[in-house]
Image (cartoon, rainbow over all chains, first blue to last red; front, side, top):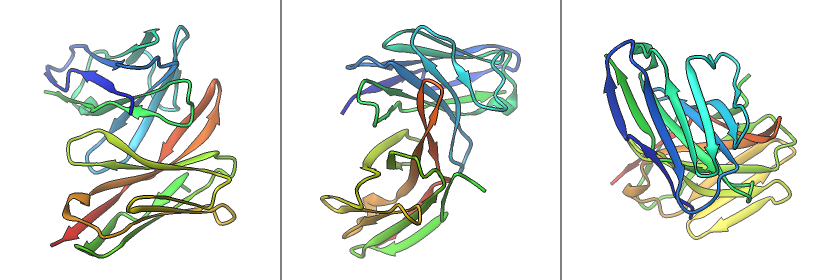
Amino acid sequence: GAVVSQHPSWVICKSGTSVKIECRSLDFQATTMFWYRQFPKQSLMLMATSNEGSKATYEQGVEKDKFLINHASLTLSTLTVTSAHPEDSSFYICSARGLAKETQYFGPGTRLLVL
Amino acid sequence: GEDVEQSLFLSVREGDSSVINCTYTDSSSTYLYWYKQEPGAGLQLLTYIFSNMDMKQDQRLTVLLNKKDKHLSLRIADTQTGDSAIYFCAENKGNTGGFKTIFGAGTRLFVKA
């Protein structure tokens, strides 16, 4: 199946700093990418949907100024957590969808710990 | 209520069949999915079913869909210890620019040797 990578796989940062997470589709062009957040023992919560070359669509309750999403190319989307705080600590997972719209391929996730 | 609901835990013995159930709300969902997540890892798509089907079989996996009741199930035959994981049911819902996938809370499957 298609491969989606995320970088970094884990990051520890100080409160108040910004963290950028990259999501790449390695062997297909992703017209749409999704960013999810997963707290321990909970389900994935969709944060935002991004289409290449346009602004991301954020889910209700997700601050767009705090979670900046850029989808500048068909193989790369980035999520920047600005001024991170301990409550932002979570597992962030991206997924990508190509032309075959019935399937999404998930990255391995990025574990963020804000001290 | 929640868009996608599933029971939180299931415990089976190795070699038995596991059946994980899920209900969803959006009757217009065209695809329904089962994902597997092992500890500390991302999601692995196990299988999906198109809404005009009522059954799909793939090796040890059988998916049953009752569209009238909006009920989806995943049966794992001859469950192995390596099947221990969290299984997420998901439906797709339309939104601007396409559709998005909504996940249930996940069913944690414990397989006892």
